[in-house]
Length: 192
Image (cartoon, rainbow, N blue to C red; front, side, top):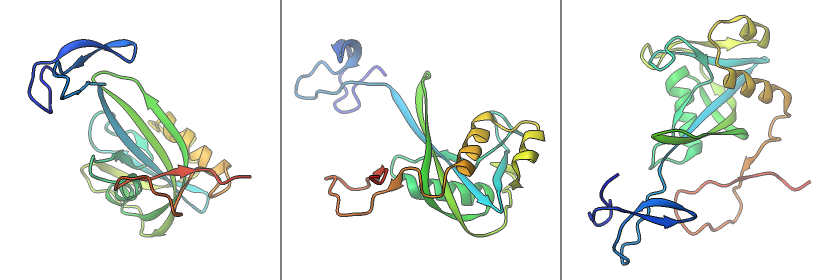
């Protein structure tokens, strides 16, 4: 990034937060570039002790098996995003139960935070779209261990969903909470 996305000024390097960062030289603007970040989400859907997997149809990792998931759009809340990804990639309607894991990946040019949800099956049979996914189905842990190309992170997520009681992860707060801005989602644990 060479120019300020707010005012168009050429960025300069400035010490901010203990490190040099590209920043706008105009005090009235105040823009500081903290890097590029993305948010992803994946869904573990269990039916009869079997987990829903999709086979990737696009690179990278075409042919690999994984839980359905993808990116959260900048104008999209995360709960509808993961429910959309499960429907798009696997043809299954499911609703979020709880959060069972969060992965952070440092990388250039983009760092990523990926939230793993457990979803309750509502309806539908697994199907693939032939583009994003080229296979879909429910598989038991024994089958998954024998399959080639199942991503390790997906195995971890499935094991976690099967080991933890339903709803024991972070759940969506729906009470009278005023965050002060539209489009927010807050997940937390119930007090013991």
